Length: 384
Image (cartoon, rainbow, N blue to C red):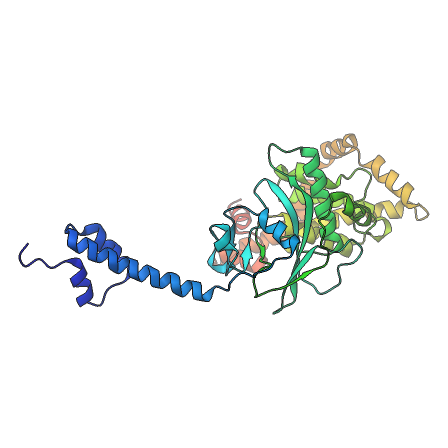
């Protein structure tokens, strides 16, 4: 075609040979010679990008410890990985993923190892040592890796009893070593990456039974949920449908009962705030946590005042006797209206203040900030 100027010539003339422009030109071009030239330019640019990226990725070590080799062999064939969590995670072949800082080590339906996020520098004592510790030298935070000899199956097709046992063991180990309870374990520090310091403390994989003592240690903790009617693998799971407040109250009252004479308001508040931070999304406000802790601690303190000479066993029996479902149902039937009147009387001063501020022309949002009360509540008060 006489006088035809292809897209390749136009992009060269305007110094616009970006990858996106070359792809757009390939999509719109109809001339075979122009398409061939555009494809060559695009391939050349992509090859340059790959060469530059490969230069910035450290090579894999030539020798791997047998334990690390076992972990790598049992990883997913296409794991998630990332070199910067803030920029998101990607999925690639194992060989490419192993060149990055963070990587997925467990299969979707099997747990070949337990990964714990340790954000303190205290020694990990009281239990068998972890197999591997990967340390961030910038802040000395660590990922502790416990490798299981036989991967634990999870998911809908696995034994529910075995899964509950594994969850109890994992939770108990985390509490003994004070690990981060918010850590999901999807990505861990890649033990092969030179950015971290990798140390191997135990070369042989463990069995779950090797950490059975963790359950005993947790039960003996003063703030542990060791009440006779508390089941470690079911902490508040059955109350999740009741809402955050009810679930928090139900989950925290049994550990508070087991604290006996140590169940002061401050101790119960710490328990409530810990549960709130790890289980509620979004978390409850500090004011609501205080009310829940006050409700639980008042009940426990009432039991203490009932008999100063009571032993812990007698005290727990008294709790069991006064907290049966029948007693609770009777209290709700008799005291529901009265408790509502008491709460309304307690908030009447705040109601009056909200109406006065509203009458002066302030918005609901401003009133909410001044009184520290949700805006929806302020609207309801002022309209009624």
